[in-house]
Length: 243
Image (cartoon, rainbow, N blue to C red):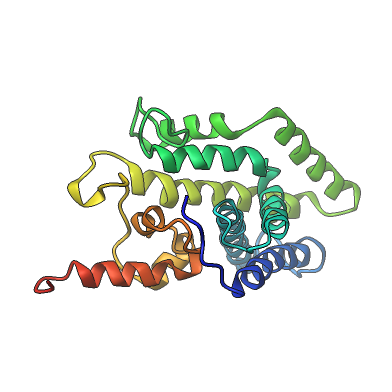
């Protein structure tokens, strides 16, 4: 992976995303005047799922060492983000993600399915490769701790469990399935990756610009919040009439 050109904003943006996810979740679990019949419940649940997606993308940026030039700060942020997202092992993710970038869609890619390109079977294979028993135990412990502390069960399910599942599906769909599924076309070379059509608002809302996936593989040292610039540059370079 290429050495990143760090921005002083990396840590700030990472902490804002983590803080927004944690603060919004705490409000929903403890103070929000909502019920299962309130439209706001579903709107806030969707927002929490989106913030959870940003939480993992923050951990992903740390895997590429783009959060901070100070290694322990970068790894601490990544560890925290991955643990909050779903008790994921940051170290294990680093190893797997390095393998993904080394051989995207190849036999050594832990994110790719060589057997099927259908969404749900591929998603199932993807989850089996990443889920662990310690992770299940930690998540179960979190769930029961929240109940022990007096949080209503429906709130835990609606604002923590369901958004976590939706965020996982969102990340897989926009960050793995759409970018890397076959058939592969010449414009996906050399990374076997495609990008969403250029629409920066949709790219932000769908997966924190991670849908600009060719650009991410071309420059993994670029943080998520700068990928839109690379997308603009590539579209303009490929525009008809440009030499």
